[in-house]
Image (cartoon, rainbow, N blue to C red; front, side, top):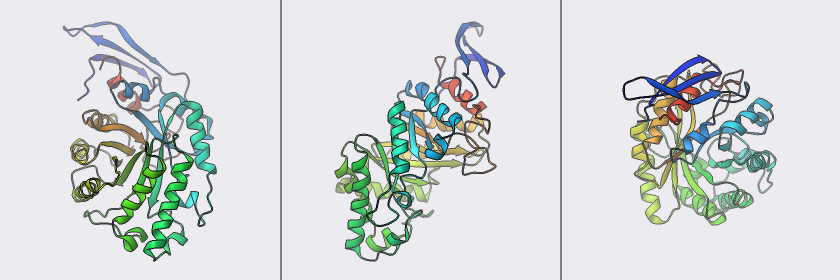
Length: 343
């Protein structure tokens, strides 16, 4: 576990000072002074500090509507290293009518990322939700196969070399570990997984391809079902490279995350903490999740599901790292202090 070897003196929400401890418990000169450049930014880049511990990124979910808010775009530029489109790459946004594609929102996000040196994680190619009715109406296996292949190939080809990770299949499991009923599973069984992953890989062999789900925050039936599926698909040549765990937590709910990550890591080459938000955003809960990733070598990164509490889907729960005034919260500063040069 990451334990800071500093004594950090909190002054206010915008300033703190951390002094490295000596063997006798006294302090020496300050090794880090953290100040902000205004309310739009944390004092130090959480992405920079996280990468210093061997990880690939600390990212966030945004889209054109949120990036158009100057405070949010400034926070993302200063603090995060990866961006995920919250909605603009989903099927209803990209192909609402068959073979008629709209890339406006996705292009905006990818262009922002390239301009500002950010990684992009694509989200999501196949999901039972936000799915156009014309897809739901398909009952032919051959038709659905070609539709999946065309959808995945078109999107991944467009952003080849620009998107480094994709959520190829999203939320395909029930809580008991069985496969969720959807047009994909009802018509194709679990072979829809093979079809989607192979199509995405054929379009961009360098992209890391993920299967993603929620309520994987402890070792439970759902997690075991997903692990069993990946363990059956990968030896058969299905290019599943990673597993994403959507870490939507209640207050005090982070205790099982490390064991869950370690179990997921037995099935995939890499894993990531994804869609992270925690009711109340306590420093303790956030540090528990960050430490769980740090303690799991295959955990390559963390993505929080939004920037400011103004834009969270969890209205009234204040689950993110920046408050409604776009100030970094105590949890953000706690992570920085734990990750920093005194750690």
